[in-house]
Length: 242
Image (tube, rainbow, N blue to C red):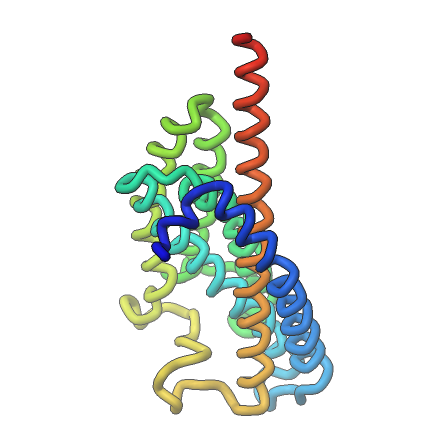
């Protein structure tokens, strides 16, 4: 069986209808367990107090804001190379979700930053690149809405996605590029010495899993909606021509 079979809209609809119930349940379990554990069952940090618990929303949302754009980049490249419509529709479906994750990351980052830095906003490299990523999300969504021809819209938004990927990478690695930034280093790292305390680590990992599954669930739902919307437009166009 070839992976490209799932680029067929009918095959995608069949497969996603089977996957959605299981992914939805896993999403709910991970989010409930991770957030309840993190916010209510972990102690306050010695230096940061209860504000440290914002990581259970901020870290997963920031990770998904970046990874959503990476997913959009991959599906956009598939569209440009293979011209599979499901990939273009999946990229379009992911954009509002990534935008929402970016907004959550920016807001929770401001909430965290005020007690840590004494200000809600600073022109730190990572914060600035995240703000630019937010603007790229807005531009991507607006470009889809502005162009009536769906294939032309998919082409132009794919190019925009490639350009915006530079800032997705910058927002991920800005702390490594510019050591003078206020933003702290990675909360989770392959280097065990950089990880947070174990008491916060496990619920954070569960929250991250929950956000990943939430993203997958929402992308599947929205892609199915985009496919149905395109079918309806095609039917309406045929009726008008007939």
